[in-house]
Amino acid sequence: MTTTSTAAPTDTVATDTLDILVIGGGFSGLYALDQFRDRGYSVKVWDAAGDFGGIWWWNCYPGARTDSTGQVYQFSHKDLWKEYNFTELFPGHEGVRDYISFVGEKLDLRKDISFNTTATEAAWDEASKTWTVTDSEGNTQRAKNVIVATGFGAKPLYPDLPGLDTFAGEVYHTARWPQEGVDMTGKKVVVLGTGSSGIQVVQEAAKVAKEVTVLQRTPNLALPMRQRQLTPHDNDELRHDLPERFKIRSRAFAGFDFDFVPMNAVDLSEHERELMYERMWEAGGFELWLGNFQDILLDDAANRTFYDFWRSKVHERVSDPVKAEILAPKEPPHPFGVKRPSLEQDYFDVFNQDNVNVVDYNKHPIIEVTPEGIRTTAGLHEADLFVLATGFDSNRGGIMAIDITGVDGAKLEEKWEHRVHTNFGLTSNGFPNMIFLYGPQSPAGFCNGPTSAEEQGKIVVDFLEHLKEHGYTRFENTRESEVAWTDHLDEIFEASMFPKAKSWYWGANVPGKPRQMLNYCGGLGSYFGQWDADKDAGYRNYQFS
Image (tube, rainbow, N blue to C red; front, side):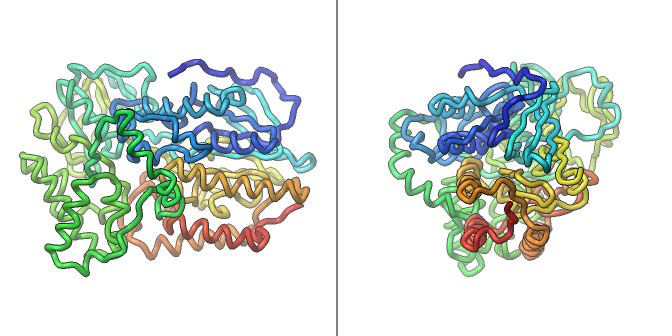
């Protein structure tokens, strides 16, 4: 793929005023750029990454890959899917970057993107009804509207570990991995965290490292990926029904081309249920999570049947009973599916190797990091490379990293300090003419990324077109609408099984972060259905001028 990049603006103060400035060049930002540009808006994108890729520019750690098949992890937009061939069923980060570069070149997007440009401030001016956005170099850009499309994983979460600065080896967060890569051959590698990035790094490190030690805080109820290589013929075969699959994903619960089975696990006999689970297991992928029985995320008894099935599969693959019990304990660490499971290829198998070990971090927490390695209550784990697979300050973190000043000097960081309030995860009172895509209180965390980019993108395009048609230059949602939306999310959350797991879905992974569900967990059908009702009522939650 190409590695050239567009320089940041060089003017200290931009002389033009854009119709729209988009902050973030991932799927959502690129879709918005193309759609608004087609409609005659002056629009530019600022992106902190060095080139096309969005989060996949940053996610370049060993083994990084999607948990969606390439066929649904792409745009339906402008029939681009007819031309691009994926080399793997589940593309790695190189494959996703290549796809996004293909999109960028086909749509001629590069000319309107400033890469290596990090937005640091945004200030609203009521008199001119414009935003002034400043980057890390002090360059500014005025815009009538700002779309913040930083994504839910823009701010890595670094653990506060005593002695970390004394470590003599290499230490990297998976979200800030060196672009040139890191050679793990023959090294002693310690991995902290067992989310998706931790699992993917462990699978790769186990092939070449001298030792791999996994510090597991919570067992990951990982599912089989069923990865395979694809030929051009395979791509043609997978393409034949894509238009129908795109239609399904646009309103399926989580934006995939499948949905929950309209049957209850508890209504079947044990034999019937096991046969269904075996068929799902053989197929693999997220259908085991979001295409499972309809009561799997609603009923404790149903949920436990799948957990026990999953545990038996792990114990079949891990020969050491002590390791197997750490990885898949008899009692669930939480209900299946209320923390995002990962897809794995040979993660559980590598623990049969003599060079791979797992430590129960809850029983043996880190005492300190020393120059030689990581000391837990079980002893010193020598390390040449310390991998921090510790996740993100998700949903709001990337937005709050920008100093956003709204009406009468109000700060978004202060408004959201204790509780996020938005209308549909799109806008927030006091910050007119600003829209969030893939942000907090939207379905982002439960949605296939390109699906969210397109479906949210469509309603935002319609919304701004509505303003233009009526001659409005200012919009702002009412305070009542965002309080009602937050109450709605709280109600769904509290009625679900999600509170039974400490997860990034509701901020439980970040010390001191307010505990609040930040991802709409009612499904895409409910989300867009409610938006359509408000739209049909003349966007009743907004004030225009």
